[in-house]
Picture 1: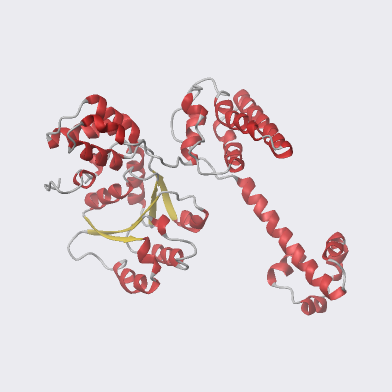
Picture 2: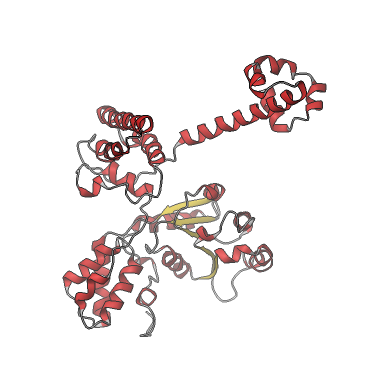
Length: 396
């Protein structure tokens, strides 16, 4: 513990070792398995909402391994030359003062796909060349720009910490700081933090310096985006239709059509037999309302679509479920994308042919089966200058 009154409590009481980590026991176990199997995979990605302890867990790993930690953040990856010059050698050379070394890439979400062109590529090169474990932290590892990163890294999710765990942490801090705060105030801080330990400690530190603890009303509830994984877990694991269930998708930063695909993809993962039939029936009714909304512009029907996707699917089972499930990304999105890619190739082929033959692209696409026979000749292909993808589509 850092003995400094001016240090923020979230830093002063940061976890230092695995035994300090509270509410993330499953994540700790997965980290231990990753370390034992290294270098089968050279990187582990700790992902979850802000404040749940991703960076703290990385430093706990360094403590347990007696490792020097080389920390990078998103701003470092805006300079590829700096990475190659400094990080490249450091990722292969042993520590001078400690037994091991760990490379921490903190808040990888900050690497923008446009502004930091090449930054993610440089990170992937670092993963391939590093002689030491690489720990990556991210709020949303399922962003499409991280598709290659997900393949190369072991994924470990850190969930929102239960308010009771946060409450115990606050009580311990109050005891160490000789700070007298009522149980009701501590409970309120814990609930309003919504799993964000860092935010709870910051709120407690601010309130401890106030003359009136009643000013707790000034501490607003954390307005955080709930991940689709947390929402699915709540729907698929619980049966009680309460206020939480009715607004389970309110904070998922995702269009309703995408939520529909996520639910559709993962219903068979959780349900079997009669429960599967009932859940799919609720999903089909949600689809009926979705169709009515699109045809008639009756936006008030969206409340029924949300209800069926949440409470309707949850009510399909008879009892609560426990355990952790690895929910899958919707495969139908990939199929639609692949179909669109194939359609795009077909269209560019027809456009080139139509321009040379002075016909419309629509006419060429209508007679595409005949067109494939004509374009089988090599001299015609060379004249129309088809690229490799277009040739592959014709030969398929």
